[in-house]
Length: 161
Image 1 (tube, rainbow, N blue to C red):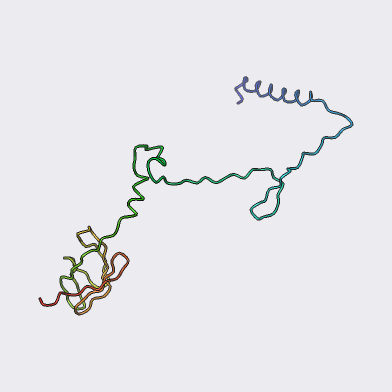
Image 2: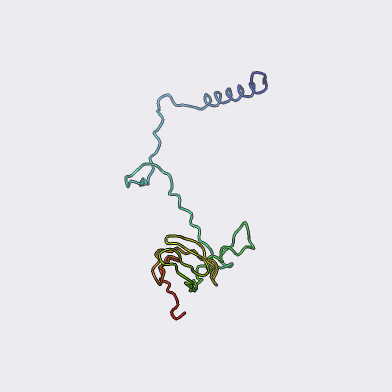
């Protein structure tokens, strides 16, 4: 800034112009300035008390996911179908999963759909509906209690083999 004479002269010129325009405004020697008018509609604050601010209430934006392409689309990916796929995926019904208790070593291990579990162990098993997360809760003499998809089931050995 020290080496910019042009900048200094511009700033000085703006300052002089502001002072001249303030001095050029007429003023009446016997009259005082009127106080600013108060807002005619006092607004309520969040606590419920009245305030004198004249700020308007600003509405909150609400975004609604469209139900179909006619109701709206994604402005960034107009040909994408992702806003509509969410609703159809929510209607999908969870298929019943077939589990087979293949064998038991009393108090030690169980084999479910070809995977070995010990008591308290958790793991994925292969099913016709895809891989599922299973947790072995308790191993009994002829059955096993497992937890899968938020529910408990008791699997029994097939009789007569």
